Amino acid sequence: MSDRPSPLYGLLLSGGASQRMRQDKAALSYRGEPQLLRAWRLLERFTERHFLSVRDHQRGDPMRAGLPQIVDGYEAIGPAAGILSAQDRFPDAAWLVVACDLPLLDERTLQQLVDARDAAADATAFASRHDGLPEPLCAIWEPSSHALLKQRHDAGSYCPRKALMQSRLVLLPAPGDALDNVNTPEERAEMQHRLEYPA
Image 1 (tube, rainbow, N blue to C red):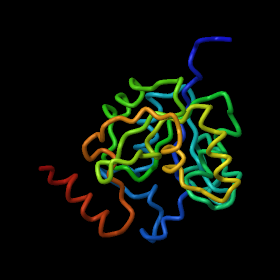
Image 2: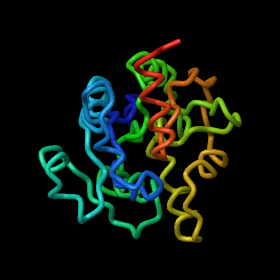
Image 3: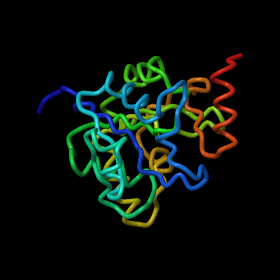
């Protein structure tokens, strides 16, 4: 058996319903570029192969259609659907999973995550700066994480954060505000202001 770690693939989660935002969060523009494309360029720098996680009705969306996709094979259960679908398609890969609503995510933060990766663990993740719990949507999920995530799914539990909390986890300190996400029009306005007028 090889000692080489599993290959690291990238998964950009873009299948959310964006109900609180009332428009597609992936299409929101920050610094003149749709957030989905900005996050995609970041992911490309760190992974051997990279895929966009989409729901079936999003496949032909003009912004998404030109990128390699993995279509959710699970009902609308949130981010776990994208992670499980990717693991099902490439079970021997580790996945650098990134949400598409992190406008402050940068190369340094992803480099820190990749450098800290422990392939013998189930996952490597940052702690939230708000509650100290693991952040599942900017994390590396090793192949060994699949069993628990699938077991929890089959039991009707769809929270990837709770799956991480039950896993063998490398937990890194929160990377400042790099993982602050944007879910509402009010949060978007605040983020735009932060980007235009940094402290």
